[in-house]
Length: 162
Image (cartoon, rainbow, N blue to C red; front, side, top):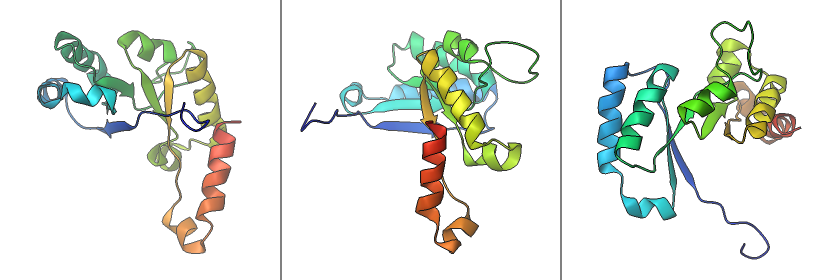
């Protein structure tokens, strides 16, 4: 602690979106691992956020190389299990080796109807399982043009962490 506040290590996360087949992801992960410098461990957490199908093979590359690069899922569902076709539980990503999960990404909100309520449910599920949440907030161009950006983002943050 410094000056009464906890120091946090910065995070550098790369979201691969819906890119890279498994074979492409393994090659890219190996290239990233080869470029990773041990001195970074003390100053920054490096996190790769690939598509679900790439998580396990990428984790295997990083484990084999004894790399400190972490992996994160691009999304997660708040229920532990059940009839939720296409969803991935926190337990599933944790077993693969994910240290984090992205929640609330603008694309998930805009294209898939994710809300502040569902983001909050996901954060609670992640916290309960001791997996970190990379929480995304942000405004649209319309909100920015209205000049209400700070109010909009404050509302998202308050709702996400309710």
